[in-house]
Image (tube, rainbow, N blue to C red; front, top):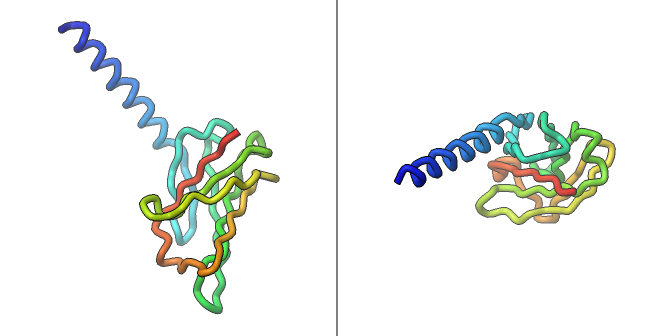
Length: 122
């Protein structure tokens, strides 16, 4: 019984440390807020987002992830819009600290984008 209790405590400790480290990576978005991911190994201090807005029809044409650490250049980036309903976009190769994801027509409205999730592989 004592071993089981110690194993459960150790597991909870590992989970807590992993969860807490995921909360430390900041993502700076402007009007549309971006998601957070703490498992990025080549960029641990966060990234910025920029949106390509078309004012003539109030749509979003692209999402650009910026200020990615140069250590990530050459890696593949992926983007998922609206966690529950969106499809993953990518891969897009990171170059000069940026990765741009272009939407296909019909383009989404800014109001329809409730969240984005970015991950980097490579």
